[in-house]
Amino acid sequence: MTIEIVLLGTGNPLPDPGRAGPATLVRAGGRTLLFDAGRGVCMRMAAVGTLPVMLHAVFLTHLHSDHICDLNDVVTTQWVMSPDRRSLRIFGPARTSDVMDGITAMLAPDIGYRLAHHADLDWVPQVEVTELVAGVAIDDGEIRVVAAATDHRPVEPSLAYRIEQGGNAVVVAGDTVPCPALTELCAGADVYVQTVLRDDLVNLVPSRRLRDTVDYHSTVEQAARTAADAGVGTLVLTHQVPGPAPGSATEWTAIAARQFGGTIVFGEDLTTVTVPGR
Ligand SMILES: [Zn+2]
Ligand SMILES: [Zn+2]
Image 1 (tube, rainbow, N blue to C red):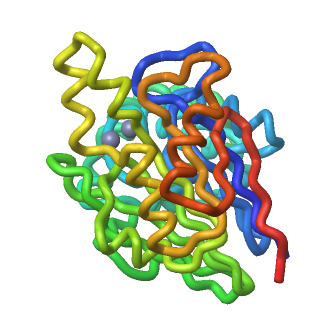
Image 2 (cartoon, helix red, strand yellow; image 1 turned 180 degrees about the vertical axis):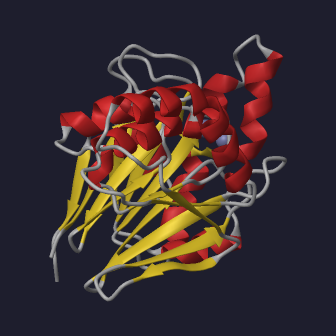
């Protein structure tokens, strides 16, 4: 069976009319999994025929606002569109429960309005949060999802996920610098999706706050080196910082190609990568 990866949003924290916030959809073994829930995630899911009610689970790489700012939309839309009481499973690092509690508190007026107005809706949003350190998140006979701790310090903890199905494997990593646990998670994967930064460009920007971001993201070269060290088949560049200039895709992939001989995909919103079944 094939695994399909859809980059729902490839943006970074700065609003961009052409790029939604970080979010990646993975379809594998009949499961639909969402990784991060950045700005515009439900719109981009709708563009590929997926609604929150169709998700088997949501995985968060870390709790930076750009990666979770539309999680409330996923939760509310899953709730109001569910024909019956069904849970939304959310996996994430420590403090994911605190974030969910805050979202639930923020939604309290809305939840009250809808419960009062719809006779057939007699349950509040059903969210099951599992906080992970590392290890197996899901192993249901069809797919296996394994988490590893990454290094996005001082943002701690942060996670990357490996999705396995029928002998194929895909890794979705969030913001992180290269680290042994990430390379190990990526070992032999068909596809490795990495959020990346161009230090050569960011270091030119006269903004201390933007330059601060260089030390806790993988540069394009570093992501490519991780891909090479782990022996992956395809490297996918997403969440590019700074927002890429029009027509610059080949510049980004050429930098990666200096370190990595496999396939390199420059991500745009709704870029889809398919791993053929074995
Ligand atoms: Zn981050
Ligand atoms: Zn980010």
